[in-house]
Image 1: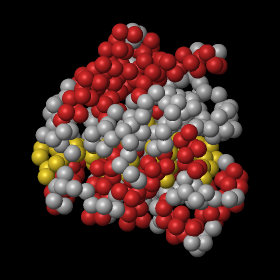
Image 2: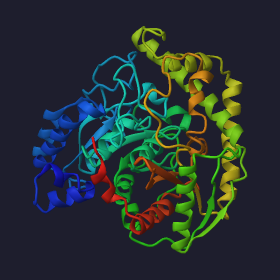
Image 3: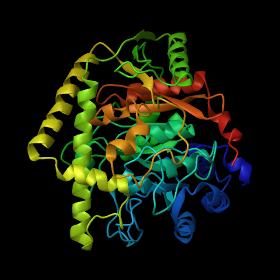
Image 4: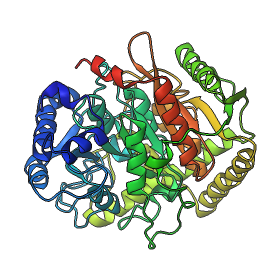
Length: 476
């Protein structure tokens, strides 16, 4: 398989070639490893590789899953493989091999995917850019001076560059959708409880965070959700049952949808003009397909929801670092964690049980308002990012003043945390690019359990306005 030919296929496309014996899984794995070795010095997307393990798995007996024999990469957060280190991008986490395998990895392997490495992340997945002191910054394949987004930026960079067609990602405040937007990929954050986080976690980040993937095609995302959405009865809760196979469902045209459109932040702040234009073009495209689009925002307290999110997030940073201190005997300090992480840790230590409970109740209250709104609305269309992908170095990870450190982020991530707070699904689609050639994603959201609606609409939009040809334009 040639270097050029490999990158033309999505994950299901490669799996079909392997199943038809037009190419072997070993050949595909060799090509993925060769591309990683050739491209990663510029991208810094991959921070750990087990090439021998990947080749051995590709030589072995393949599963009959949808992705049989396809190489993939795992994010350096959760997604544990026994014997592999998972350091969450932090110097505070020792480089020791995991003792157990995550349910997510088990499900990936059952679907036929073969992991062979781990991807770069910001420390503990905190930032919307992938820059950490442990690994250094990851670079956006579309322009190396720009960020690939975060926190799943290494995964997104690897997929956009054609190293692998699919990679693991997680999303606690937009960390699948942000890098998907920045790198021109499909990225779905599923309904809370859809994907098990066992056996290590019950509901990571108090239910804010979800596992998933970044991909080049809607069908790969649908098939991955089929693979990941298996109930673990040890989990504290589960999402509503799916409406059958997502991969089969996207072959059917969606009904005529009622789509609400937001062209600004909910406080009235305007996006970058190119972003606003992209969102309006997406609305026109939906209308051309027969859907009803009306500009209106949901009746929720966006400011209160963001404040509640911040409280829960800070408390969970404090919890995570305190647990690490118990395990390692190393206290959080600037010698082992970054300034912004330490600032969030100190804020989290001040969150009382009452304040945390109040924040959780706010999320639930606003989630009920959103659920009622979705009784008369099928889909909510927004920007994913308020500006084109930021340049690396925009955020100062050494800054301990959290308000000052995150100030450049204002308006950059206007909506994604709302889906994490309310437990609802959202998907980024790579429909547009800026005049400078940088991806401009748009986000479609739905009620809890509404992944089928989103994926069917996404498949329709992908057919109407294909983006696959864009990947040949990546220059690294």
